[in-house]
Structures are given as structure tokens and as C-alpha cells.
Length: 257
Image (cartoon, rainbow, N blue to C red; front, top):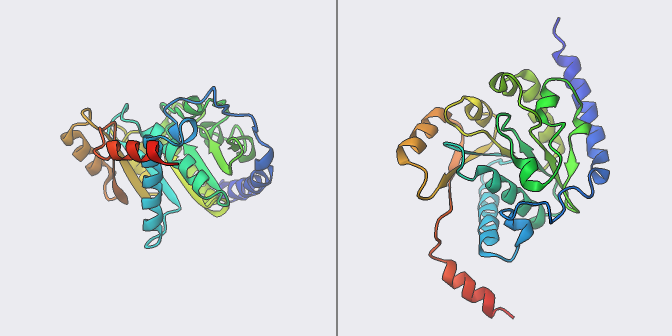
């Protein structure tokens, strides 16, 4: 018997309740002392690094003038290149730039989700529990600090992450959050060696590939791009590089009165 329709209706109702419940969820979650120092959009908003994340956000804003970019996925070729920190900082930059917009950050890395750890919030229940039917959407959505940014963590690691992300329930979930949020930033799994990022990448409006300076190999990045197989890649984000503009920005910041 096919219960897809009834599950979709149930998810729709719980999403509506989650939207109403959002202002009261986890007000104290992610205190500044618990947040990873690399989340510079929150811990050091006046820093050069935070300014780079704001610049990245406004580049996406300019792209939005030409094409729909409601759901943006962030991935990398391999683990350890900084995709999670990039995603979190980008989502926070969005929330700070447009307080009136409803921003959603989703950790869809069901193998090694780190958003909860980086933000210093509880990790369960999360997306994994939603996809397995163990909980409802309203149990997952958490508002971060005094912003309109909502967070859905990855939760536990399912036995078959690829199958969970490729499920009809995941497609329903992404469709519903499109209707209830203005901007959605998805921390995807690394592109290699699994198919997870490719599966979800085709359900986004655009993908960013995080490349770590002096770490990522060109051959590996090329393989990752091929693995994505026609997904809407917007470009690459160079992480961990020395910026030639840094001296100017530092001087400008120190002289600003």
C-alpha cells in the first residue's frame, strides 16, 4: 500500500506547526561560549574572514537577480576541506543581512554531520530521525539565537545514508521547506566517494564546491565535479588561503572611526 500521500500531508501539517513554534524553540541554544571559533560570522563579525563570507553571500544575492536560488547546497570533494564551517557562516551571514527573511540551515551529511557540534547545539533528533519516521518536523526545527535562522541537524547515522537521502520522504521534506523558508542552505556530504551529494545536488537550485588551499588536489576536484553529473554547480569557494586583499582590509578596519 502506498502511504506517500498521507505522509506528505502529515509532514505539511507538522511543518506549519514548526513554523509557528519556531520563535519559542531553543532560545538559549548555541551560546557564544559553545560555538566553534571558526564561526566568525558570530564570534568575530568584524573580522576579515567574516567579511569574506558576507561577500560570498552578496554574490549569491546578485545571482538571485538572474535565477532562482532558494536552496543552495555546499559540498567538497573530500572530508576536511571546510564545507560545514563555510555553510554555517554563509547561513549566518544571510540571517544577519536580511533579518526579515526566514533562513534555514540543514545538515544533510548523515555520515558525519558536524553542524550541531560547530554551533554548540543538541544533535538529536535530526534529519535522520525524520527520514526514518521516528519524529516529526516540529521536533527538529530550532531557532538559533535571536535570529530568524532555523537549524535542522543531521541526527544519528542511519544504516544506509544514501538510501535515506534518495527516499521519497527526503524529496517531500525539501519540497515543503521550500514553501516555508525564504533561503535554505544545505551542508551536503563530501562528493567522493559516495553518491549522497550527487543525489541531493540535483534537488538544489545551486551548488558551491569548497576547495581547501594547499590541500585539495586538482585531480580530486575534477573527479568530484564529474561525480555531480550535471548538478547546478555555481562555482568554487577557496578556503584557507592567504588573501592578497587582507592588508588593505586590515588597514581600512583599523583606521575606520
